[in-house]
Image 1 (cartoon, rainbow, N blue to C red):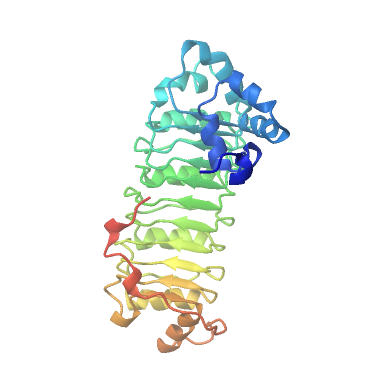
Image 2: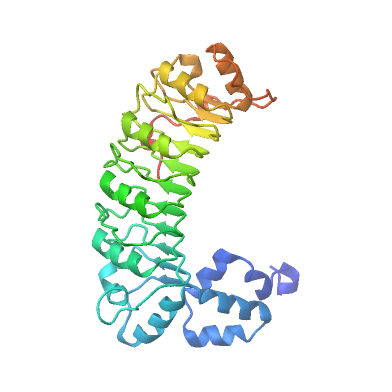
Length: 338
């Protein structure tokens, strides 16, 4: 066994360059230890300073923590809540007379699998006008939202995967966040139809409706408002059938996953006609299309598929890349997870 850092090639200064390990170490250190660590080298000094911008709350605050935690939260750029604690245990920092007035520096907040509810989320959003990313994956108490008067102009990325968000709540977010680029709605079974009148989704590049209950009509409305989409995930969407893409622009679309959906041959032709720059399409497990087409196609194979279906004038140049066969696709919707 090596006896020194020289023999292993590992030093504390090298360790600090690993972001995951660095954050793991900081979780177990108090203010005094962090201060001592910052004196060991310039790398650790910079790391400790940067760590102050990211706050991870993994236990209920004690009485003596309040003032120091308030200071950290007020200046934080990223706040992450452990699913082990209840939001009620930290609610006083965000709501009520003793709360922090504004989170103007906050850019990212992570509540994954927490018990935060819609009303609490609304209160936080009022105080964090510069948020760019919100992660609410697995938050089962997020259902409806009322965001009147809340500014989400800076928001680019939101994750509602496996939450109970409803169509009306999603519409509220979309109204207030015109610069969204990524939306994850995996497993959101309450997303069915959508009313997107007056909503601008020009900046949106990625949407994940996988394993949701979105219907064809709702999807069509969404696609009309999002002309710059590059990636669409509709894996396991059993209500997508008989698409009408008239007036819809999919010119920027590069990837679409339709695996285990009920898309049929006519729907497939509609998509291929509207998406001339498509590079990847997954049709694995789609029982309503030809058996030989139930697989994942890449760019060159998409061109051949279009030719076979008689779709002319939309194929990109041929390249010599391989096809991933259906054998690599798992047996059904239950195999995928958030």
